[in-house]
Amino acid sequence: MNILILGSGGREHSLAWAIKQNPKCDRLIVAPGNAGIAAIAECADFDINDGSYVVTFAEENAVDFVVIGPEAPLAAGVADRLRAAGILTFGPSQLAAQLEASKAFTKEICDACAAPTAAYARFVDAGAAKDYIRAQGAPIVIKADGLAAGKGVIVAMTLDEALNGVDEIFGGAFGAAGTEVVIEEFMEGEEASYFILCDGADILPIGTAQDHKRVFDGDLGPNTGGMGAYSPAPVLTDEIAQKALDQIIRPTVAEMARRGMPYQGVLYAGFMIKDGQPRLVEYNARFGDPECQVLMMRLGAQVLDLLLACAEGRLADARVNWADDHALTVVMAAKGYPGPYSKGSVINGLDGLPETSMEIVFHAGTTEAEGKISATGGRVLNVTARGASLAEAQARAYALVDRIDWPDGFCRRDIGWRAL
Ligand code: AMP
Ligand code: GLY
Image (cartoon, rainbow, N blue to C red; front, side):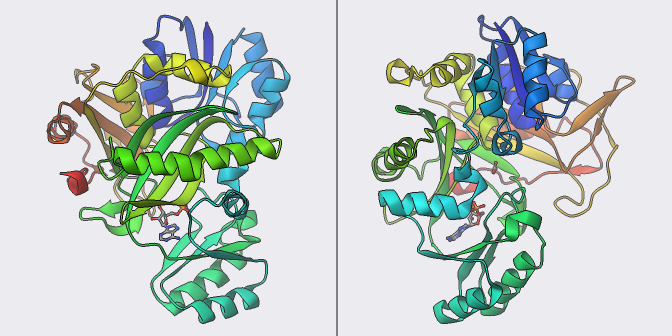
C-alpha cells in the first residue's frame, strides 16, 4: 500500500523507519520530512495544515493510508478532511483532538467521567484569576488553554510567579491560546506517559515512557520539548497502568464517544504518580516526541498493522508483541536551545553509523546539501538504542553519541537516570 506520513521531526522519522520495514508498505512519502527521512522515503514539501491540499496530494498519489504526526494538522481538522474524502487516516478528528488543543475541554471531560486529575478553575479575566490564585496560594499551576507549542504552562512555586504568569498569558505571550487560563492544583509525584491506541470504541495500550523535559543534567534548567526518553517507564507498574486504564483512559474514551466525538488515534496520557495512584496531567492527541522514537524502536514493523487496526476500527482483535527489552533515546540539540540558537552548522560522523533494530540515529531537524548534513532546528538528532536492560540501551546510545562530530551541538549525559 501507499502510505503518507505528515510531519518532519524525529517522531516522523521513527514512524517512517518502523512502517517501512513492514512488507505491506509499498511506497512511503513523508511531508515535509527531513534529511534522515529522505534516506528511507520520498519527501514532499507542502503545507501539512492545509486539509484540502493534503486530500488532493493523497488522491493524486494514490495514497491508501495517511498517518498524521504532529498536533497542528489534527487541530486544523486535516483528519476530518481526509476521512470525508474516503482516505483511511490515523489521527483524531478536530473535535476529538480538543483533548490536546484545549486544557479546559480536557478538564471538563475529566469532570464528566470522574477521572482523577488536579483540582482546577477556569478564567477569562485576569482579575478573577489572580483573586483565585491569592486564595489558593503557591505552588500552583497556570496554563494557557490552547496549543502553545509545548509552552503555555507555568508551574509557579511562588505567588509572584503565578500572578506574573496570568499577566503573561492574558498579555498575549501565547497568542490566541491564551484567551482563557486554567489554574490547577500543583500535583506532586513522578511523571510518566502512557500511549494507548483508540479506535473510537476499543483501546490497545502500546507502551509506557518517561522523558526528560529540562535542558541540563540532573533535570535542571529551562523546560524543552524533551531532551531524551526511555521505554518502558518502571514507575508505571502493571498495577498502576491498570488503574490508569480503568479510572482515566476507558472513561475518557467512553465520554468522548457519548459526546459524538469518538477518539480515533493514539492517546498520549501524561500521569503524575504518587502513592500508587495515577492522576491525569494532560492528554496529547499524537505520539510524544521523543517518546515515539523509543516506542517505535521496541515495536518495529508491527506498528503499521497496529495503526491500520486502529484506523479501521479493529483494535478489539489486535495484539502487541512485546520484546521484553528497553529502549532509550538521547536528543542532540543546537547549542543555545531552548533559547536562541544558530542554524546551519554541519554535522559530521553520521556516515557509517549503524542503522539496525538495536541502534539508529533518527533525524529531527536536519537538511542535506552537497552531501553534508546540517542542523535546521533546536532539537536535531535522536540517538536511539535498545538493550536487554535500560543500562545496556543507555551505554549503546551514548557510544553512538560519542561517534558524532558536531561541535555546535550538545546533549544531556544522564538520560534514564531516574530509572537506573
Ligand atoms: P502540560 O503541558 O500540561 O503537560 O504541562 C507541562 C508540564 O508541567 C508537565 O509535564 C508537568 O511537569 C507540569 N505540570 C502540569 N500540570 C501540573 C500540575 N497540575 N501539577 C504539577 N505539575 C504540573
Ligand atoms: N515530549 C513531549 C511531547 O511530545 O509533548
